[in-house]
Length: 183
Ligand SMILES: O=C(O)C[C@@H](Cc1ccccc1)[C@H](O)SCc1ccccc1
Ligand code: NI
Image 1 (cartoon, rainbow, N blue to C red):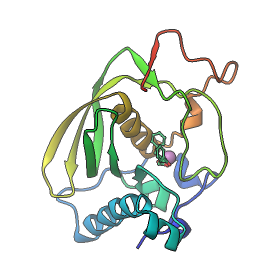
Image 2 (image 1 turned 120 degrees about the vertical axis):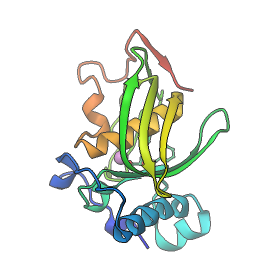
Image 3 (image 1 turned 90 degrees about the horizontal axis):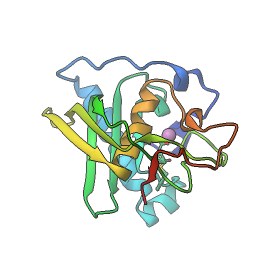
Image 4 (image 1 turned 180 degrees about the vertical axis):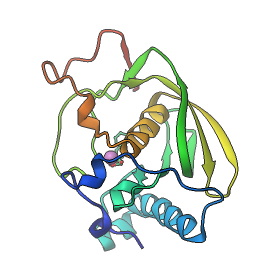
């Protein structure tokens, strides 16, 4: 089972590398790892389990965060329209995105960052993602708002990008004029 001991923290070089494509069909080992990642995200949202194992709640996790430079992400969350997203994905790729941007008014956090980093994180408001699921099917996901933000946060991890790289250092708390809040 993945616990916080397995999650690498900022400063570890793996978080700044470009993760490698996973060869498909995935090996049993890669499938097991991705399943463990999805299980972590689910466990972290279960009060009893999170309490028992000291898990920090998360809605997503990317393989580099457990020290694996492979293009695998897991997400488990419900968006503001109550749509559920629960996926383990291999090789997620943003195929297209809106010009319009969005953001979370309270900024973002990260399981690999043990500190608060205040600031608006501008993200594309709508994205289309292609990926292969844990079950081996190719999916094309059209995402907007909160879901678009979560997927961009996780795919950023595969490209060595941290959420605070997007914060405008001159004026961190002011949303970009053309951006629309996701909440
Ligand atoms: O470190 C990670 O990748 C998990 C991130 C995911 C995230 C996505 C979008 C915006 C912020 C963070 C967080 O640690 S998950 C923590 C969390 C929990 C509930 C709601 C929002 C963020
Ligand atoms: Ni993160």
